[in-house]
Length: 298
Ligand code: HMG
Ligand code: MG
Image 1 (spheres, protein in one colour):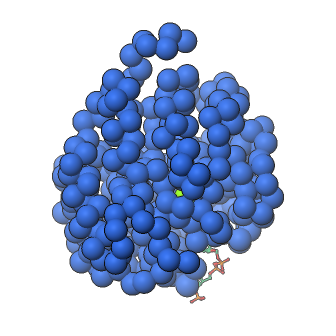
Image 2: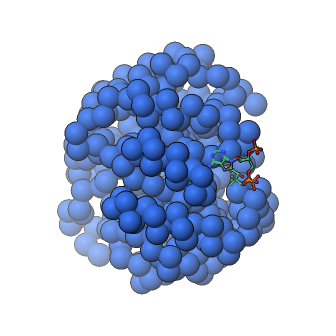
Protein backbone atom coordinates (compact mmCIF):
# COMPACT_ATOMS: atom_id res chain seq x y z
CA UNK A 1 0.00 0.00 0.00
CA UNK A 2 1.16 3.53 -0.78
CA UNK A 3 2.33 4.91 2.62
CA UNK A 4 1.24 8.48 1.90
CA UNK A 5 -1.96 7.84 -0.04
CA UNK A 6 -4.94 9.38 1.84
CA UNK A 7 -6.99 6.86 3.80
CA UNK A 8 -10.78 7.05 4.40
CA UNK A 9 -11.79 9.15 7.40
CA UNK A 10 -11.84 7.21 10.69
CA UNK A 11 -15.18 6.66 12.46
CA UNK A 12 -14.80 6.85 16.22
CA UNK A 13 -17.23 5.26 18.67
CA UNK A 14 -17.15 6.76 22.15
CA UNK A 15 -17.37 4.05 24.81
CA UNK A 16 -16.35 6.10 27.87
CA UNK A 17 -19.79 6.30 29.50
CA UNK A 18 -20.02 2.46 29.43
CA UNK A 19 -16.58 0.86 29.20
CA UNK A 20 -14.98 3.74 31.07
CA UNK A 21 -17.39 4.25 33.91
CA UNK A 22 -18.21 0.55 34.49
CA UNK A 23 -14.79 0.14 36.09
CA UNK A 24 -15.02 2.93 38.65
CA UNK A 25 -15.17 1.75 42.24
CA UNK A 26 -16.78 4.85 43.79
CA UNK A 27 -20.32 5.89 43.04
CA UNK A 28 -20.54 8.40 40.20
CA UNK A 29 -23.52 10.73 40.61
CA UNK A 30 -26.20 10.27 37.94
CA UNK A 31 -25.96 13.99 37.12
CA UNK A 32 -22.26 13.58 36.36
CA UNK A 33 -22.90 10.69 33.96
CA UNK A 34 -25.64 12.60 32.18
CA UNK A 35 -23.46 15.72 31.96
CA UNK A 36 -20.62 13.60 30.54
CA UNK A 37 -22.81 12.12 27.79
CA UNK A 38 -24.31 15.55 27.04
CA UNK A 39 -20.86 17.10 26.76
CA UNK A 40 -19.75 14.27 24.44
CA UNK A 41 -22.83 14.85 22.27
CA UNK A 42 -21.52 18.35 21.45
CA UNK A 43 -18.07 17.23 20.30
CA UNK A 44 -18.93 15.96 16.81
CA UNK A 45 -18.94 12.29 17.87
CA UNK A 46 -21.60 10.36 15.98
CA UNK A 47 -21.94 7.38 18.28
CA UNK A 48 -21.85 7.10 22.06
CA UNK A 49 -22.24 3.89 24.06
CA UNK A 50 -24.22 5.44 26.88
CA UNK A 51 -24.59 2.46 29.21
CA UNK A 52 -25.19 -1.26 29.68
CA UNK A 53 -28.10 -3.40 30.85
CA UNK A 54 -26.36 -6.22 32.70
CA UNK A 55 -26.79 -7.85 36.09
CA UNK A 56 -26.38 -4.88 38.46
CA UNK A 57 -24.70 -7.17 40.98
CA UNK A 58 -22.03 -7.94 38.36
CA UNK A 59 -21.40 -4.31 37.38
CA UNK A 60 -22.99 -1.95 39.96
CA UNK A 61 -21.74 1.19 38.22
CA UNK A 62 -24.09 0.57 35.26
CA UNK A 63 -27.16 -0.03 37.44
CA UNK A 64 -28.66 3.35 36.61
CA UNK A 65 -28.24 3.16 32.82
CA UNK A 66 -32.02 3.39 32.48
CA UNK A 67 -31.97 6.82 34.13
CA UNK A 68 -28.98 7.89 32.06
CA UNK A 69 -30.87 7.08 28.84
CA UNK A 70 -33.98 8.85 30.15
CA UNK A 71 -32.14 12.03 31.08
CA UNK A 72 -29.57 12.65 28.35
CA UNK A 73 -30.27 15.31 25.72
CA UNK A 74 -30.27 13.39 22.47
CA UNK A 75 -28.56 15.27 19.71
CA UNK A 76 -30.04 14.55 16.29
CA UNK A 77 -27.61 12.51 14.21
CA UNK A 78 -25.89 10.93 17.23
CA UNK A 79 -26.51 7.23 17.96
CA UNK A 80 -26.82 6.32 21.65
CA UNK A 81 -26.06 2.61 21.97
CA UNK A 82 -26.39 0.08 24.78
CA UNK A 83 -24.49 -3.09 25.70
CA UNK A 84 -26.69 -6.09 26.60
CA UNK A 85 -25.83 -9.69 27.59
CA UNK A 86 -29.24 -11.33 27.09
CA UNK A 87 -32.92 -10.81 26.27
CA UNK A 88 -33.66 -9.18 29.61
CA UNK A 89 -30.98 -6.59 28.83
CA UNK A 90 -32.48 -6.10 25.39
CA UNK A 91 -35.96 -5.53 26.87
CA UNK A 92 -34.55 -2.82 29.12
CA UNK A 93 -32.51 -1.21 26.34
CA UNK A 94 -35.49 -1.14 23.95
CA UNK A 95 -37.69 0.36 26.66
CA UNK A 96 -35.08 3.12 27.00
CA UNK A 97 -35.08 3.68 23.24
CA UNK A 98 -31.43 2.83 22.73
CA UNK A 99 -30.53 3.50 19.08
CA UNK A 100 -28.23 0.52 18.69
CA UNK A 101 -27.60 -2.74 20.54
CA UNK A 102 -24.31 -4.48 21.28
CA UNK A 103 -23.83 -8.05 22.44
CA UNK A 104 -20.51 -9.31 23.78
CA UNK A 105 -18.57 -12.54 23.77
CA UNK A 106 -14.87 -13.41 23.71
CA UNK A 107 -12.23 -15.40 21.86
CA UNK A 108 -11.11 -17.16 25.05
CA UNK A 109 -13.33 -19.50 27.04
CA UNK A 110 -12.03 -18.62 30.52
CA UNK A 111 -12.59 -14.90 30.07
CA UNK A 112 -16.07 -15.47 28.67
CA UNK A 113 -17.03 -17.71 31.60
CA UNK A 114 -15.86 -15.12 34.10
CA UNK A 115 -17.46 -12.22 32.23
CA UNK A 116 -20.83 -13.61 31.17
CA UNK A 117 -20.95 -17.08 32.73
CA UNK A 118 -21.22 -18.93 29.43
CA UNK A 119 -19.06 -20.79 26.95
CA UNK A 120 -18.48 -18.98 23.66
CA UNK A 121 -20.91 -21.33 21.89
CA UNK A 122 -23.62 -20.92 24.55
CA UNK A 123 -23.22 -17.15 24.51
CA UNK A 124 -23.83 -17.10 20.75
CA UNK A 125 -27.02 -19.13 21.30
CA UNK A 126 -28.03 -16.66 24.03
CA UNK A 127 -27.55 -13.80 21.57
CA UNK A 128 -29.52 -15.42 18.75
CA UNK A 129 -32.93 -14.05 19.87
CA UNK A 130 -31.34 -10.76 20.95
CA UNK A 131 -29.94 -10.21 17.47
CA UNK A 132 -33.15 -11.32 15.78
CA UNK A 133 -35.31 -8.98 17.85
CA UNK A 134 -32.86 -6.10 17.40
CA UNK A 135 -33.03 -6.54 13.65
CA UNK A 136 -36.82 -6.82 13.77
CA UNK A 137 -36.82 -3.49 15.64
CA UNK A 138 -34.72 -2.17 12.71
CA UNK A 139 -31.84 -1.21 14.97
CA UNK A 140 -28.18 -1.73 14.14
CA UNK A 141 -26.43 -4.56 15.96
CA UNK A 142 -22.78 -4.84 17.03
CA UNK A 143 -20.95 -7.84 18.46
CA UNK A 144 -17.88 -7.44 20.64
CA UNK A 145 -15.16 -10.09 20.65
CA UNK A 146 -13.06 -9.61 23.80
CA UNK A 147 -9.57 -11.02 24.38
CA UNK A 148 -8.93 -11.00 20.64
CA UNK A 149 -5.16 -10.85 21.13
CA UNK A 150 -4.38 -11.76 24.74
CA UNK A 151 -6.43 -13.25 27.54
CA UNK A 152 -5.55 -12.45 31.17
CA UNK A 153 -6.09 -16.14 32.03
CA UNK A 154 -5.12 -18.12 28.90
CA UNK A 155 -2.33 -15.99 27.40
CA UNK A 156 -1.98 -15.34 23.68
CA UNK A 157 -5.07 -15.95 21.55
CA UNK A 158 -4.80 -17.32 18.01
CA UNK A 159 -6.09 -15.01 15.24
CA UNK A 160 -7.89 -18.03 13.71
CA UNK A 161 -9.99 -18.29 16.89
CA UNK A 162 -11.04 -14.65 16.59
CA UNK A 163 -12.06 -15.17 12.97
CA UNK A 164 -14.07 -18.23 14.03
CA UNK A 165 -15.96 -16.23 16.70
CA UNK A 166 -16.60 -13.35 14.29
CA UNK A 167 -18.05 -15.86 11.80
CA UNK A 168 -20.28 -17.31 14.55
CA UNK A 169 -21.59 -13.80 15.29
CA UNK A 170 -22.05 -13.12 11.62
CA UNK A 171 -23.95 -16.42 11.35
CA UNK A 172 -26.63 -15.18 13.77
CA UNK A 173 -27.01 -11.84 11.97
CA UNK A 174 -24.46 -9.52 13.60
CA UNK A 175 -23.21 -7.01 11.04
CA UNK A 176 -20.60 -5.03 12.95
CA UNK A 177 -17.72 -6.47 14.96
CA UNK A 178 -15.72 -4.74 17.65
CA UNK A 179 -12.46 -6.56 18.16
CA UNK A 180 -11.26 -6.08 21.73
CA UNK A 181 -7.70 -5.90 22.96
CA UNK A 182 -9.20 -6.22 26.42
CA UNK A 183 -5.93 -6.07 28.37
CA UNK A 184 -4.18 -3.65 26.03
CA UNK A 185 -1.30 -5.97 25.24
CA UNK A 186 -1.47 -6.27 21.44
CA UNK A 187 1.51 -5.17 19.35
CA UNK A 188 1.31 -3.68 15.84
CA UNK A 189 2.54 -6.98 14.34
CA UNK A 190 -0.18 -8.92 16.15
CA UNK A 191 -2.74 -6.44 14.86
CA UNK A 192 -1.44 -6.95 11.31
CA UNK A 193 -1.62 -10.76 11.64
CA UNK A 194 -5.21 -10.70 12.82
CA UNK A 195 -6.40 -8.14 10.28
CA UNK A 196 -4.73 -10.05 7.45
CA UNK A 197 -7.10 -12.96 8.20
CA UNK A 198 -10.14 -11.02 9.38
CA UNK A 199 -10.31 -8.74 6.34
CA UNK A 200 -10.71 -11.86 4.19
CA UNK A 201 -13.59 -13.11 6.35
CA UNK A 202 -15.84 -10.04 6.73
CA UNK A 203 -16.15 -6.63 5.03
CA UNK A 204 -13.51 -4.17 6.20
CA UNK A 205 -16.16 -1.58 7.05
CA UNK A 206 -17.79 -3.98 9.51
CA UNK A 207 -14.62 -4.14 11.64
CA UNK A 208 -14.04 -1.83 14.60
CA UNK A 209 -10.96 -2.07 16.77
CA UNK A 210 -11.33 -1.66 20.50
CA UNK A 211 -7.91 -1.03 21.98
CA UNK A 212 -7.28 -0.67 25.68
CA UNK A 213 -4.07 1.20 26.39
CA UNK A 214 -2.39 -0.70 29.24
CA UNK A 215 1.03 -0.75 27.56
CA UNK A 216 0.67 2.53 25.62
CA UNK A 217 0.40 0.85 22.21
CA UNK A 218 -3.22 1.65 21.37
CA UNK A 219 -2.56 4.72 19.19
CA UNK A 220 0.21 2.94 17.26
CA UNK A 221 -2.03 -0.10 16.77
CA UNK A 222 -4.87 2.09 15.49
CA UNK A 223 -2.66 3.91 13.00
CA UNK A 224 -1.26 0.61 11.72
CA UNK A 225 -4.77 -0.79 11.20
CA UNK A 226 -5.85 2.36 9.39
CA UNK A 227 -2.74 2.86 7.23
CA UNK A 228 -2.09 -0.77 6.35
CA UNK A 229 -5.60 -2.19 6.05
CA UNK A 230 -7.80 0.89 5.64
CA UNK A 231 -9.76 0.02 8.80
CA UNK A 232 -11.77 3.09 9.79
CA UNK A 233 -13.76 1.91 12.84
CA UNK A 234 -12.22 2.60 16.26
CA UNK A 235 -13.62 2.63 19.79
CA UNK A 236 -12.20 5.07 22.30
CA UNK A 237 -12.96 6.61 25.64
CA UNK A 238 -12.66 10.31 26.43
CA UNK A 239 -10.01 10.93 29.08
CA UNK A 240 -8.89 7.30 28.63
CA UNK A 241 -11.23 6.46 31.48
CA UNK A 242 -11.91 2.82 32.31
CA UNK A 243 -10.78 -0.78 32.25
CA UNK A 244 -12.64 -4.06 32.46
CA UNK A 245 -13.96 -5.42 35.74
CA UNK A 246 -13.25 -9.00 34.55
CA UNK A 247 -9.74 -8.38 33.18
CA UNK A 248 -7.28 -7.84 36.04
CA UNK A 249 -4.75 -5.14 35.17
CA UNK A 250 -6.56 -3.80 32.11
CA UNK A 251 -6.44 -0.04 31.79
CA UNK A 252 -8.86 2.26 30.01
CA UNK A 253 -9.55 2.42 26.31
CA UNK A 254 -7.35 4.57 24.16
CA UNK A 255 -8.30 8.20 24.86
CA UNK A 256 -10.65 9.61 22.21
CA UNK A 257 -8.73 12.89 22.18
CA UNK A 258 -5.45 11.00 21.57
CA UNK A 259 -6.92 9.20 18.55
CA UNK A 260 -8.46 12.39 17.14
CA UNK A 261 -5.10 14.12 17.48
CA UNK A 262 -3.12 11.19 16.00
CA UNK A 263 -5.41 10.91 12.98
CA UNK A 264 -5.22 14.67 12.43
CA UNK A 265 -1.42 14.52 12.54
CA UNK A 266 -1.59 11.68 10.00
CA UNK A 267 -3.68 13.87 7.68
CA UNK A 268 -7.29 12.94 8.49
CA UNK A 269 -9.79 15.16 10.27
CA UNK A 270 -12.41 13.09 12.11
CA UNK A 271 -14.60 16.17 12.54
CA UNK A 272 -14.43 15.73 16.31
CA UNK A 273 -13.45 18.74 18.41
CA UNK A 274 -10.42 17.89 20.55
CA UNK A 275 -10.87 20.87 22.87
CA UNK A 276 -14.48 19.89 23.58
CA UNK A 277 -13.40 16.31 24.30
CA UNK A 278 -10.82 17.59 26.76
CA UNK A 279 -13.43 19.78 28.43
CA UNK A 280 -15.77 16.76 28.74
CA UNK A 281 -12.92 14.79 30.35
CA UNK A 282 -12.18 17.60 32.83
CA UNK A 283 -15.87 17.74 33.80
CA UNK A 284 -15.96 13.98 34.38
CA UNK A 285 -12.66 13.57 36.23
CA UNK A 286 -13.74 16.22 38.77
CA UNK A 287 -16.21 13.60 39.98
CA UNK A 288 -13.66 10.78 39.87
CA UNK A 289 -11.38 12.65 42.27
CA UNK A 290 -8.18 12.29 40.23
CA UNK A 291 -6.44 14.16 37.42
CA UNK A 292 -7.61 13.57 33.82
CA UNK A 293 -6.09 10.36 32.46
CA UNK A 294 -4.99 9.02 35.86
CA UNK A 295 -5.94 5.42 36.60
CA UNK A 296 -8.27 4.53 39.48
CA UNK A 297 -6.55 3.47 42.71
CA UNK A 298 -6.19 -0.34 43.01
P1 HMG B 1 -26.12 -15.17 35.38
O1 HMG B 1 -25.86 -15.11 36.85
O2 HMG B 1 -25.91 -16.45 34.65
O3 HMG B 1 -27.57 -14.61 35.03
O4 HMG B 1 -25.23 -14.02 34.72
P2 HMG B 1 -28.98 -15.12 35.48
O5 HMG B 1 -29.82 -15.11 34.27
O6 HMG B 1 -28.86 -16.36 36.30
O7 HMG B 1 -29.45 -13.94 36.46
C1 HMG B 1 -28.79 -13.62 37.67
C2 HMG B 1 -29.37 -12.32 38.19
O8 HMG B 1 -29.03 -11.27 37.29
C3 HMG B 1 -30.92 -12.30 38.28
O9 HMG B 1 -31.27 -11.42 39.35
C4 HMG B 1 -31.32 -11.65 37.00
O10 HMG B 1 -32.56 -11.03 37.03
C5 HMG B 1 -30.22 -10.63 36.82
P3 HMG B 1 -31.54 -11.99 40.86
O11 HMG B 1 -32.59 -13.02 40.68
O12 HMG B 1 -30.23 -12.54 41.34
O13 HMG B 1 -31.96 -10.75 41.60
N1 HMG B 1 -30.00 -10.28 35.44
C6 HMG B 1 -30.10 -9.04 34.96
N2 HMG B 1 -30.40 -7.87 35.53
C7 HMG B 1 -30.43 -6.76 34.72
N3 HMG B 1 -30.14 -6.81 33.41
C8 HMG B 1 -29.83 -7.98 32.81
C9 HMG B 1 -29.81 -9.15 33.59
N4 HMG B 1 -29.55 -10.44 33.29
C10 HMG B 1 -29.69 -11.12 34.42
N5 HMG B 1 -29.54 -7.99 31.52
C11 HMG B 1 -25.02 -12.39 33.01
C12 HMG B 1 -25.13 -13.86 33.35
C13 HMG B 1 -24.48 -12.30 31.62
C14 HMG B 1 -26.36 -11.73 33.11
C15 HMG B 1 -24.05 -11.67 34.01
O14 HMG B 1 -22.87 -12.43 34.11
C16 HMG B 1 -23.73 -10.26 33.60
O15 HMG B 1 -24.57 -9.39 33.64
N6 HMG B 1 -22.48 -9.99 33.24
C17 HMG B 1 -22.08 -8.67 32.79
C18 HMG B 1 -20.64 -8.59 32.64
C19 HMG B 1 -20.22 -7.23 32.16
O16 HMG B 1 -21.01 -6.31 32.03
N7 HMG B 1 -18.92 -7.11 31.87
C20 HMG B 1 -18.36 -5.88 31.40
C21 HMG B 1 -18.73 -5.59 30.00
S1 HMG B 1 -17.78 -6.51 28.81
C22 HMG B 1 -16.40 -5.55 28.53
O17 HMG B 1 -16.17 -4.59 29.21
C23 HMG B 1 -15.51 -5.89 27.37
C24 HMG B 1 -15.69 -4.95 26.17
O18 HMG B 1 -15.44 -3.61 26.56
C25 HMG B 1 -14.73 -5.34 25.03
C26 HMG B 1 -13.28 -5.52 25.47
O19 HMG B 1 -12.71 -4.57 26.06
O20 HMG B 1 -12.76 -6.59 25.24
C27 HMG B 1 -17.12 -5.01 25.63
MG1 MG C 1 -13.44 -2.72 26.65
